[in-house]
Amino acid sequence: MTWKLPALRSLLGSTLLLSSLVSQAGLVVDITGDAGSGQTVWTFSGSTTAIGSGFFDDNDGLSNNDTWQDLINFTNDNDVEVTAVTGDATLTIAGNTRSIDLAYIDNDGSDTDRDDFGVGVDGSGNFNFNDGDSVSWSGSLLVDLDINNISLAGTPVSISASDYGNAAYAALALTINIGQVAIPEPASIPLVLWGLVGIAYARRRETR
Image 1: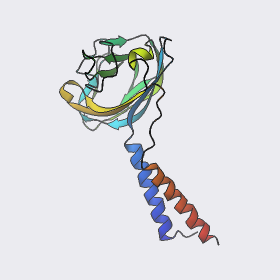
Image 2: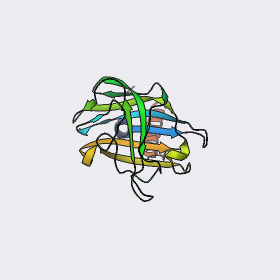
Image 3: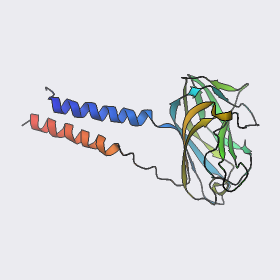
Image 4: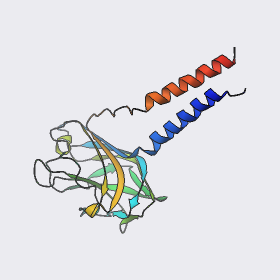
Protein backbone atom coordinates (compact mmCIF):
# COMPACT_ATOMS: atom_id res chain seq x y z
CA MET A 1 0.00 0.00 0.00
CA THR A 2 1.25 3.47 -0.93
CA TRP A 3 0.63 6.31 1.52
CA LYS A 4 -0.68 9.51 -0.07
CA LEU A 5 0.69 12.86 1.10
CA PRO A 6 -2.45 13.96 3.02
CA ALA A 7 -2.46 10.69 4.96
CA LEU A 8 1.22 11.04 5.82
CA ARG A 9 0.66 14.59 6.99
CA SER A 10 -2.18 13.45 9.24
CA LEU A 11 -0.07 10.65 10.68
CA LEU A 12 2.92 12.91 11.36
CA GLY A 13 0.73 15.58 12.91
CA SER A 14 -0.96 13.10 15.23
CA THR A 15 2.37 11.56 16.25
CA LEU A 16 3.89 14.94 17.07
CA LEU A 17 0.88 15.98 19.12
CA LEU A 18 0.89 12.72 21.08
CA SER A 19 4.63 13.07 21.73
CA SER A 20 4.05 16.61 22.96
CA LEU A 21 1.38 15.46 25.41
CA VAL A 22 3.64 12.74 26.81
CA SER A 23 6.70 14.99 27.13
CA GLN A 24 4.73 17.70 28.97
CA ALA A 25 3.15 15.33 31.51
CA GLY A 26 5.77 15.89 34.23
CA LEU A 27 5.60 14.26 37.66
CA VAL A 28 2.04 13.50 38.78
CA VAL A 29 0.70 12.41 42.17
CA ASP A 30 -2.98 11.56 42.64
CA ILE A 31 -4.08 11.68 46.29
CA THR A 32 -7.44 10.07 47.10
CA GLY A 33 -9.23 8.87 50.21
CA ASP A 34 -12.44 8.85 52.22
CA ALA A 35 -12.86 11.76 54.62
CA GLY A 36 -12.52 10.62 58.21
CA SER A 37 -10.75 7.34 57.35
CA GLY A 38 -7.38 8.63 58.51
CA GLN A 39 -5.66 7.34 55.38
CA THR A 40 -5.06 8.36 51.79
CA VAL A 41 -3.65 6.63 48.73
CA TRP A 42 -0.89 8.48 46.88
CA THR A 43 -0.39 7.23 43.32
CA PHE A 44 2.77 8.37 41.53
CA SER A 45 3.33 8.54 37.75
CA GLY A 46 5.15 10.51 35.08
CA SER A 47 8.60 11.92 34.51
CA THR A 48 10.35 15.22 33.89
CA THR A 49 13.77 16.64 33.13
CA ALA A 50 15.43 18.57 35.93
CA ILE A 51 16.39 22.18 35.37
CA GLY A 52 19.09 22.93 37.92
CA SER A 53 20.33 20.71 40.74
CA GLY A 54 18.85 19.60 44.03
CA PHE A 55 18.09 16.58 46.21
CA PHE A 56 15.43 14.50 47.91
CA ASP A 57 16.09 13.92 51.63
CA ASP A 58 16.81 10.44 53.01
CA ASN A 59 15.13 10.94 56.40
CA ASP A 60 12.91 13.18 58.54
CA GLY A 61 13.61 16.86 58.42
CA LEU A 62 12.33 17.96 55.03
CA SER A 63 12.46 21.70 54.60
CA ASN A 64 12.49 24.43 51.98
CA ASN A 65 15.70 22.90 50.63
CA ASP A 66 14.10 19.71 49.38
CA THR A 67 10.39 20.25 48.69
CA TRP A 68 8.16 22.06 46.22
CA GLN A 69 7.65 25.52 47.64
CA ASP A 70 4.87 28.09 47.64
CA LEU A 71 2.17 26.17 45.79
CA ILE A 72 -1.39 27.21 46.67
CA ASN A 73 -3.13 27.31 50.03
CA PHE A 74 -4.16 23.64 50.19
CA THR A 75 -3.61 22.58 53.83
CA ASN A 76 -3.91 23.88 57.38
CA ASP A 77 -1.42 21.36 58.78
CA ASN A 78 1.97 22.71 59.81
CA ASP A 79 5.15 20.81 58.88
CA VAL A 80 3.62 17.30 58.75
CA GLU A 81 6.05 14.49 57.94
CA VAL A 82 4.36 11.10 57.69
CA THR A 83 6.64 8.08 57.89
CA ALA A 84 3.72 5.69 58.49
CA VAL A 85 3.48 4.71 54.83
CA THR A 86 3.24 1.35 53.06
CA GLY A 87 3.44 0.51 49.38
CA ASP A 88 5.74 0.20 46.39
CA ALA A 89 6.32 3.81 45.31
CA THR A 90 9.78 4.53 43.90
CA LEU A 91 11.70 7.57 42.68
CA THR A 92 14.23 7.23 39.85
CA ILE A 93 16.93 9.76 39.01
CA ALA A 94 19.21 9.23 36.00
CA GLY A 95 18.57 5.48 36.10
CA ASN A 96 19.04 5.05 39.87
CA THR A 97 16.00 4.07 41.95
CA ARG A 98 15.10 4.41 45.62
CA SER A 99 11.86 3.81 47.53
CA ILE A 100 9.67 6.70 48.66
CA ASP A 101 9.14 6.33 52.42
CA LEU A 102 7.94 9.75 53.59
CA ALA A 103 5.02 12.03 52.68
CA TYR A 104 5.27 15.73 53.50
CA ILE A 105 2.90 18.71 53.55
CA ASP A 106 3.36 22.08 55.23
CA ASN A 107 1.10 25.04 55.85
CA ASP A 108 3.36 28.09 55.76
CA GLY A 109 1.49 29.92 58.50
CA SER A 110 -1.75 31.61 57.45
CA ASP A 111 -5.00 30.89 55.64
CA THR A 112 -3.90 32.87 52.60
CA ASP A 113 -0.35 31.61 52.21
CA ARG A 114 1.12 29.18 49.72
CA ASP A 115 1.88 25.75 51.12
CA ASP A 116 4.61 23.17 50.49
CA PHE A 117 4.72 19.53 49.36
CA GLY A 118 7.40 16.85 49.21
CA VAL A 119 8.46 13.23 49.61
CA GLY A 120 11.42 11.52 51.26
CA VAL A 121 13.36 8.45 50.18
CA ASP A 122 15.04 5.51 51.88
CA GLY A 123 18.73 4.68 51.87
CA SER A 124 21.78 6.47 53.17
CA GLY A 125 22.49 10.01 52.02
CA ASN A 126 20.47 12.45 49.99
CA PHE A 127 19.21 11.45 46.54
CA ASN A 128 20.76 14.09 44.28
CA PHE A 129 19.81 15.25 40.80
CA ASN A 130 21.62 17.56 38.39
CA ASP A 131 20.59 19.80 35.53
CA GLY A 132 19.36 17.65 32.64
CA ASP A 133 18.75 14.49 34.69
CA SER A 134 15.60 12.48 34.04
CA VAL A 135 13.46 12.29 37.19
CA SER A 136 10.50 9.89 37.38
CA TRP A 137 8.38 8.11 39.96
CA SER A 138 5.85 5.28 40.00
CA GLY A 139 3.80 3.06 42.28
CA SER A 140 1.55 3.97 45.20
CA LEU A 141 1.60 4.51 48.96
CA LEU A 142 -0.98 4.14 51.70
CA VAL A 143 -0.36 7.18 53.91
CA ASP A 144 -1.65 7.67 57.46
CA LEU A 145 -3.02 11.13 56.72
CA ASP A 146 -6.69 12.00 56.25
CA ILE A 147 -7.87 13.69 53.04
CA ASN A 148 -9.32 16.48 55.19
CA ASN A 149 -5.83 17.30 56.45
CA ILE A 150 -4.47 17.55 52.94
CA SER A 151 -7.17 19.32 50.97
CA LEU A 152 -8.94 21.73 53.30
CA ALA A 153 -12.07 19.76 54.27
CA GLY A 154 -11.72 17.38 51.35
CA THR A 155 -12.34 19.88 48.57
CA PRO A 156 -10.93 18.47 45.30
CA VAL A 157 -8.09 20.54 43.93
CA SER A 158 -5.41 20.27 41.25
CA ILE A 159 -2.05 22.00 41.71
CA SER A 160 0.65 22.63 39.12
CA ALA A 161 4.16 23.72 40.07
CA SER A 162 7.83 23.45 39.19
CA ASP A 163 9.89 25.44 41.72
CA TYR A 164 11.82 22.98 43.87
CA GLY A 165 14.16 23.68 46.75
CA ASN A 166 15.40 26.75 48.54
CA ALA A 167 14.85 29.96 46.56
CA ALA A 168 13.66 27.81 43.63
CA TYR A 169 17.16 26.76 42.65
CA ALA A 170 15.74 23.89 40.60
CA ALA A 171 12.67 23.12 38.52
CA LEU A 172 10.79 19.81 38.46
CA ALA A 173 7.40 19.89 36.73
CA LEU A 174 4.74 18.62 39.15
CA THR A 175 0.97 18.14 39.20
CA ILE A 176 -0.83 17.20 42.42
CA ASN A 177 -4.44 16.02 42.13
CA ILE A 178 -6.06 15.92 45.57
CA GLY A 179 -9.44 14.25 45.97
CA GLN A 180 -11.54 12.80 43.19
CA VAL A 181 -10.23 15.20 40.59
CA ALA A 182 -11.02 14.70 36.92
CA ILE A 183 -7.96 15.78 34.96
CA PRO A 184 -9.07 18.26 32.26
CA GLU A 185 -8.82 17.03 28.70
CA PRO A 186 -5.88 18.78 27.02
CA ALA A 187 -7.00 21.04 24.19
CA SER A 188 -4.76 19.17 21.77
CA ILE A 189 -6.42 15.77 22.23
CA PRO A 190 -9.32 16.57 19.86
CA LEU A 191 -6.73 17.53 17.23
CA VAL A 192 -5.07 14.14 17.65
CA LEU A 193 -8.41 12.39 17.20
CA TRP A 194 -9.18 14.40 14.07
CA GLY A 195 -5.77 13.42 12.71
CA LEU A 196 -6.54 9.74 13.25
CA VAL A 197 -9.93 10.17 11.56
CA GLY A 198 -8.12 11.72 8.60
CA ILE A 199 -5.80 8.72 8.32
CA ALA A 200 -8.72 6.28 8.41
CA TYR A 201 -10.57 8.27 5.74
CA ALA A 202 -7.53 8.42 3.46
CA ARG A 203 -6.97 4.66 3.75
CA ARG A 204 -10.63 3.98 3.01
CA ARG A 205 -10.44 6.04 -0.20
CA GLU A 206 -7.31 4.15 -1.32
CA THR A 207 -9.07 0.79 -1.03
CA ARG A 208 -11.91 1.86 -3.34
